[in-house]
Amino acid sequence: MALARLNNLYRQVIMDHAKHPHNNHPLPQADHELELRNPTCGDVLTVQMKMQDGKIAAAGYTGTGCTISQASASMMTDQIIGKTPAEVEKMVLGFSDLVMGKEVPDQAKLLGDAVILQSVAQFPARIKCATLAWKAAYQALEESERND
Image (cartoon, rainbow, N blue to C red; front, side, top):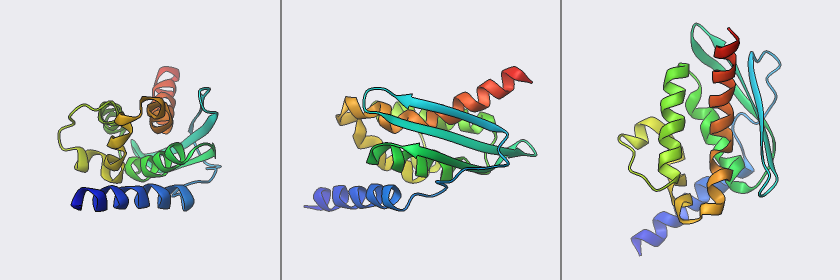
C-alpha cells in the first residue's frame, strides 16, 4: 500500500511540473541555446541558458511534447541554475544513468525532483522523452565551449 501511495505522489509531482512548468519561457538574454527533437513521439524542445561568472544564471525552455518531456525540462531547468558546465555534465550523465535503471550515487542531491523520473526505466520508449531537455542543455554548453 505504501508503494502505491509513493507512486501516486510521484505521478502528482510529474503532472504538476507538466501542467505548471518552471522556467517555460524564452530567455532573450541567452548566450547558450539548442533545439532538440524526439522524432519518435514528436517532442521539440529549445533549451536556453545565460552564463554569468562561470555558472548558469538563468535557464529556460520552450517547445511542445509529452508530459514526461515537459516535466523533465521543468525539473532540469530548476536543477541547473547556479551550476557550472562541469556540474551540469555530471548531472546529465547521472540523469541518463538513472532513467536507464542504473544506480546513481547521491542521486537526490545531484538531481533533485528529477529522481522521480527513474521509473521511466520501466518504459524504454519514454527514455528519449525524459532525457531530451538534459541532452539539449549539455550539447548547448558543449557546442559553445567548442566555439570559444
